[in-house]
Amino acid sequence: MNEAEVRELFVETGAILEGHFLLTSGLHSPLYVEKFQVLQYPKHTERLCAALAGRFKDEHVELVVGPVTGGIILAHEVGKHLGTRAIFTERENGKMTLRRGFVIEPGQRVLIVEDIVTTGGSVQEVIDVVREHGGIPVGVGILVDRSGGKADFGIPSQALLHLTVPTYQSDDCPLCQGGVAITKRGSRKL
Image (cartoon, rainbow, N blue to C red; front, side):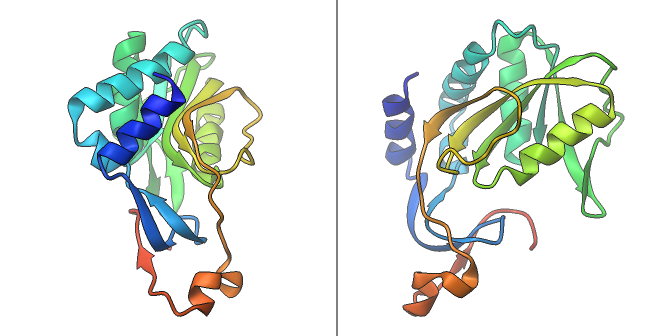
């Protein structure tokens, strides 16, 4: 799948929304990507995850890890295409961690997958968890990188779709200053 095909799929399913949004990062944005509008279709999810897996097929990945919520689906599908186990991290008392008896073996080659990256904070937390357990992060597979190329994890990363979308701190947000009502999206409490 090339980037134009991925973009077309997101537009076709109504996953790209325009308005005034409060992102999980706490930033404001005029654009929001509702990945579940795409991921609700197993055939689309399979195609996207096959494309992500293909980008890391030569990395000898032994485990795929994604953060809860969207990362669970992606980890499962990418792991299926790479023939590996797939697990997820989740927050416990505000800290990203492994639960549910999940194990990362020391020296295990791990691919981290994420749905949407704006600042890269959640991905970095997952990388830290992998390293804390002795795993070797070999790459980051991303559905949509909306960081404008600013998210750098210190390891190879591949995104299926790149969006350069302005984000604002609430004090500097022209949408707030213009009185445009804000919508909170995402699953994490700020």
